[in-house]
Length: 279
Image (cartoon, rainbow, N blue to C red; front, top):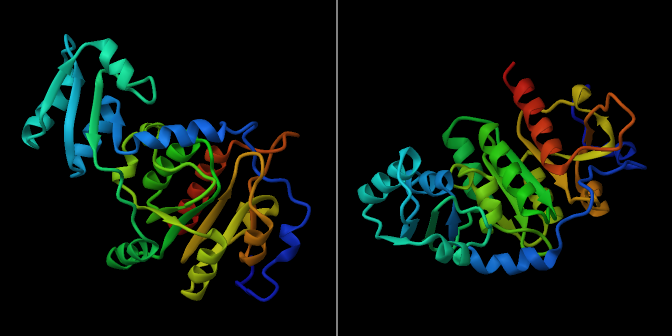
């Protein structure tokens, strides 16, 4: 892309595009039910990363009779952090679990403390880096949310922004899917993603939406201050968000297939940005 002329905002890229899709999204009711467990961490690596990341754990429940490497490491870290440990039989842990995949370890902590976009930008400034923010337009599947957060952490993004309504929050499934990345990258909740994009643009950050009608990611300039917007499963990015963004970016398809899973698309686009920014 020759230069970055915001005038017109590349509206031709926003017309007739097919959104990235992930088939049928997980039912919203199950995500809302699971939100009751926010602050509950499940799985050996998730709990271990949380403790190592300095998150306060109020209680740790471990399945009795399990010993060996990963469990011993969790117990050592709990001892170091002075976390009270209770041993329970598998049936009781199963009853406590929100994900069904606790691996013999469940931790109780305060509900996740969300960050702010200002804190993300401050971190970028302190690290001497151009801001790199990921915004999600209504991702409902907590597995996708967790996977995107994990990719964002690995790609060096300064934060992930999610909407307060009609989207997955940091439920146990999302946290587990992130493999502990929620304690390594900032996550913020905002009322309106489109309004947030406008604010970022006012601060000199370029916003591009993932959309099949957009220009190829290989032809887009993804260096400098950047916000990538990923749309909801089955719906893609909303029209208003497309309208306020600086353009749309797509992933070339080598075969006649309509789109990638939302979290896979997010990872591919993030790493194209990493590739360009490394030059």
